[in-house]
Image 1 (cartoon, rainbow, N blue to C red):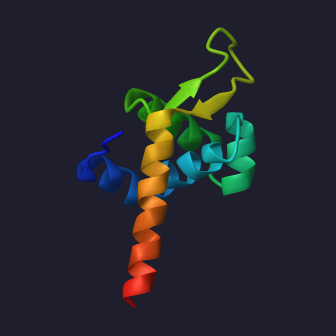
Image 2 (cartoon, rainbow, N blue to C red):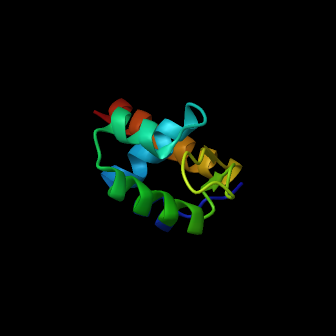
Length: 95
């Protein structure tokens, strides 16, 4: 899957988007779990999840629930995480 540099940069520059995406790459999580693991307030987690859903990097597994929704990363989201992590490795190798 080809991921644009613009999309990668959009994720990379936001601590919230990057953190949420990396945590979801580890497995299915609820917003509350993300809040605790990332030490980011729940309202910021909710807004970040909405942004990532719009970018088709994340999807909600339980959309009919009002609370306790579960989220997972999409294939496109995994590709973005791999690209971001690969960039870090390349940067370290250059130093």
